[in-house]
Amino acid sequence: MPDGAARELAGALRGDALVGVNGATATARAFGRVWGPYRVDRQERLFRLAELADPAPVAGHARLATEEDLTLVTAWLTAFLDEVALPPGLGAAAAAFRRTAAGQLMLWETDDGPASLAAASGVLAGQSRIGPVYTPPARRGHGFAGAATVAATRLALGWGAAEVVLFTDLANPTSNALYQRLGYRRVQDHLVLDFTD
Image (cartoon, rainbow, N blue to C red; front, side, top):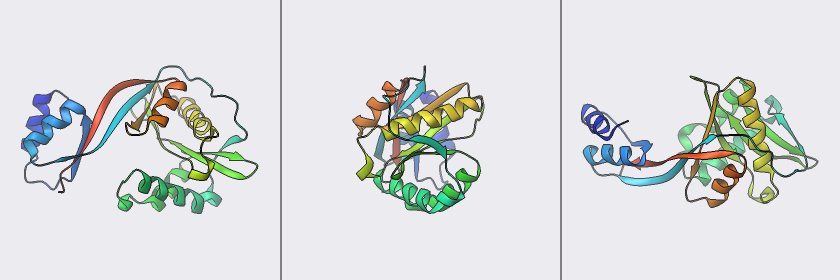
């Protein structure tokens, strides 16, 4: 969106209840300057899959989450929201149920049980978005997140997605480096602005 259009949109929405905005860095700032006081909540980077690369071999295998996994998936989605400081009201339990029923959640399973989760959104306008990706702290550092992300990416490609994208938090250099190793390339940086202060 051109900066001028962002400014016009902010003016047109004046008076509406709006708690924040997410957009390309310059566009979000242009919107925020018209809207009023804001703070930068997060800096994100949008990546698009160029060519999927397999990570180093990782113990375990991918499988779709099932109804039997709902308690675990809900707990992991709740932990993800907490870790990235997103509002808990986003509904981890409802998302776990909806996305499991839709076949969108991949688990990386080891002999010790599930180790990581990665989701793919349904294809819309030829595009699928990967996320969230979550590994419990005790299971990190073993390649499980990369393996789960590859599995979720393959799921999206299998649905016919022409483009697969994902967002990362720029404050997390580990995930930014991981996705590039898997074949994702930077598109642009984004800001998430908060208007509630």
